[in-house]
Image (cartoon, rainbow, N blue to C red; front, side, top):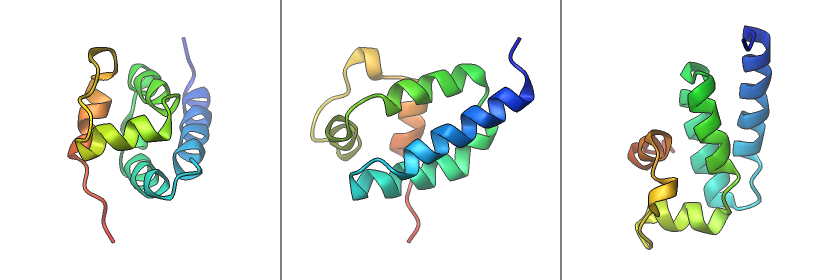
Length: 89
C-alpha cells in the first residue's frame, strides 16, 4: 500500500513536471490544472495524469485545442477533466 507521504511526493513531482514542460502554452495550462486538481487525485488518478504528462506537448496541445481527435488509448477521465478546465488570467 502506498503511504500518504509517497503520494504527496508524487504530487509534487507531477506538479513540477506540469509547470516546466518547455512549451509555454502547456506550462500555463497544465500548471494551473495541476495546482487546482492534483491535491485531490488518488493514486489511480495520478497514474492517468502521469501517463498524460509522458505524452508530447504537441499532442496534448492539439487534443486540447480540438485540432486533432483524442485517440481512444489517451481518452481518460483526467484528460476529459483537463479539456473542461479553463485557465484564469
